[in-house]
Length: 239
Image (cartoon, rainbow, N blue to C red; front, side, top):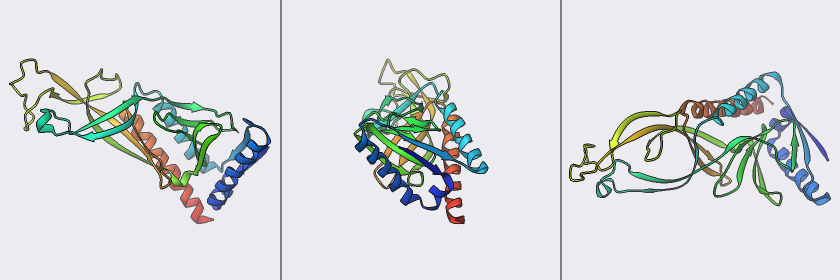
């Protein structure tokens, strides 16, 4: 089965086209297991330039020394713990990069984000595929995904990545005013590192957060995605 998607057409009737893409995938699986849908995505020049920027900053992002999937977080009583950190997070190393899926043949590689406790995210120019395996996946439109960038100051008890910036230092055991608690003889300093935070969310249930060791690359990706998504909406209104 070969499905050719014109980008302008997709933006004009995004919901219908996303439904069509879902049906195309379902029909293909009915024909033969693990068969691939061929998707050719065509851009006009301004849109291609915006997407090319997103693609290139993602490649930079993927070279960050450390990328963590934040799988949980909970509040910590700073006074009781004698700590400078008010939130404890559970994080696991995650992979991102350019990838191809067996169920989709496209002229564009997907921007891949590993999810350590759920379906992985594959970002294509016009849709996002949430993929666990060939029998378990979901599809949403690019306009349904929100990507939010922010800065996070993290009290780093492990090795500081080479591409990260130490913004200050704290102590393993601190008083409320931030000074070292002298009751602890073996008290030691801990670096507070600036990381980039990328949060992926949608009304359909996506809720993923990543910490990126390279703050600048994370910021560039967040901005590039927002610019690309905004252009999609502008084209939609024009049509």
